[in-house]
Length: 431
Image 1 (cartoon, rainbow, N blue to C red):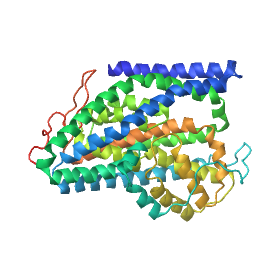
Image 2: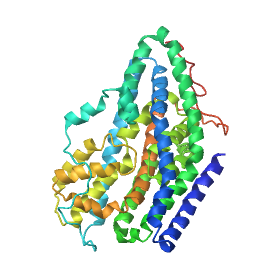
Image 3: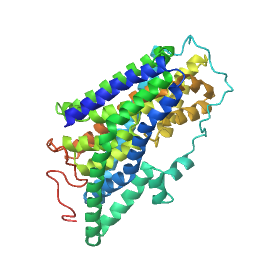
Image 4: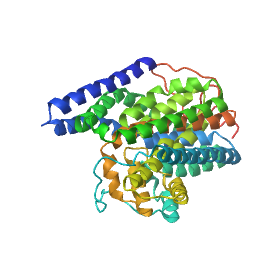
């Protein structure tokens, strides 16, 4: 079933390119309308994903943490997770900085530059610690779920599950209910993912039909340099995986082919979340670990997005011939290290971060107009990279905690329970 689904995704991507190119070249008068109509299918799929994300994250996270036992274990796992995230973030940002300086994609830019006074219409505001910290805490869990604020859901779920652990007798029935909700949400997820090939076809078709493939040639040096940088980052992540996990890591790469292709074709890390969670549990990562680390990764460990932030920001400075000293570039890296946290795993979210960063370093925000036309094609690569980075982080933490069990297979209609996989302790045992 898995191989067949992968083939469906690949076929949908190829068919989308063919149909999109046909519409762009032979139906110029109606391509805008057709692109919008076809893209509706992709939009509906992403809305279905958003519909299940909040309850899925909450149920799996609460179930996972409640089964961890002591608060000291939770603190230890959090410290290891945060340490990995910070290290991976720094490497991603630094690699983007190094590559954009080596390749100089913005030097002698052949195209016309947008007027410096031109606005992008993106919300731009200076970063402040106060805004960042207050955004972490939800004023209402209902509002956080309605807005799909994953980080806020995580904060509430941690408090909720720790409180449940402190009242084990009173929590038994509720934990059983939450486990059941997790089972049901994973079954709902399996139904939603049946529409993935259709959504992939629609997303690719709409993108190519609207922009054509020739738009890529205008910024081929920039795109080529960025994808080369992503390949190097992938190489570093894979090497890290083999060092920490061993040869078995190749199995994980095989198990996450589907979420990789979903993230790439829809340009959304969020769309790949359910399949990524399933792949990690198939790999043998404890659901207690995966349900805790993976949601955090979607706010704190978007490796592809962070690399893009430094790469694109310096590229724009190069096109306008703005000299940036090494200390200034390092200051930008430090700024992005903080401002990139909490970026939603949805299309174009990184543009908001870049726009804010450009304004802080006196780089024309208008430069974003040069890359907005191809941002979807760039977002495909960085979204897939985010999936690689988060699966690696989750499996590494599971390995460090001794909770990386044997790989196991699921049937075509099975789902992975949120708080119990083969070899784990049943609900509330010993708590």
